[in-house]
Image (tube, rainbow, N blue to C red; front, side):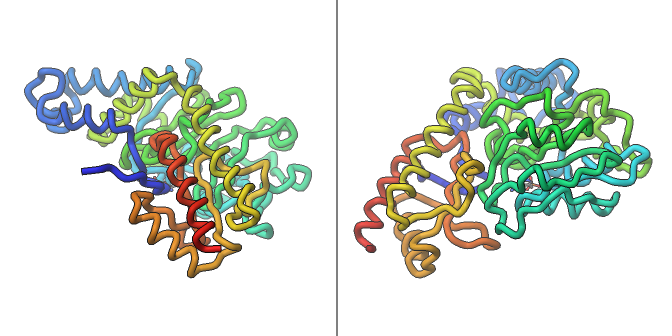
Length: 367
Ligand code: PMP
């Protein structure tokens, strides 16, 4: 059976080698006579896999010693609540920058536990740009500053600039990196905590990674469920209860694969090349394909685009014909429409090259 190129926003493609290793090891992991998902999470073999997964992630992202790696249940969404419940301490307010659907969701969840100060919102631009930091309104009394480093739906990605950092001041900075985790290095001098679900660049759905500076432990609210408490999770080596064994194992295979293939730095370069190929195709199409996002903030992971300014009949035709040649899941998110190509680490360059070839032919055949 031939594999297709799947441009899903997540869960998404994994490297074939990772899938093959998992299937080979399914019945008998490293000579133990059983599969990794059959064994006790308190056993020695499991522990060695579990610890190697975290150690490899630490190596890949050059995580400093004073930052702790946690593996948790509940995906990125549960972290929306975890952020507030772990960091509010005796504060009652928190700062949220809203640059798209996901940071908006994070702010809505945070508002269940504190008063949310919206630092700025890009809504007026339909989330096609990051609001100018000169207009940001940061409340220094807030417990933290939260932002989303890559808006998966709107295709908007950015790094914190010096001007932004000056506005944020001394507040702990928390980033949702769900959809660009492991696609580029993380600057830990700028962040107090980052989190991400695995199912885009790191493995299958079912585990979320949190990397948090240890001095932030101990500020959690009394009502916090133990399973959501970052400190409790750390103190139990992410084994407070039965962990998501299989996702952790799959991520471990993915991390090992990345380490052997040049690390995060190599994947950063491939991501740059894939994104350049796609955005370059838009630029050369004389407006046939367009992306609404400000050029400075275009995502290298999620690339939304319109055909002829949003011609729905043509977009439907595009999707149908693409599917037939193995270019799959290219529909935009239902809330924004259009098309979207998600090109995470698991998407090989040849997948993007094939998409671009298809796009050029489609334009010629459907002027
Ligand atoms: N944040 C971002 C940026 C996302 O893209 C997603 C999922 N697409 C989430 C949070 C929610 O993650 P999960 O589905 O793992 O809860």
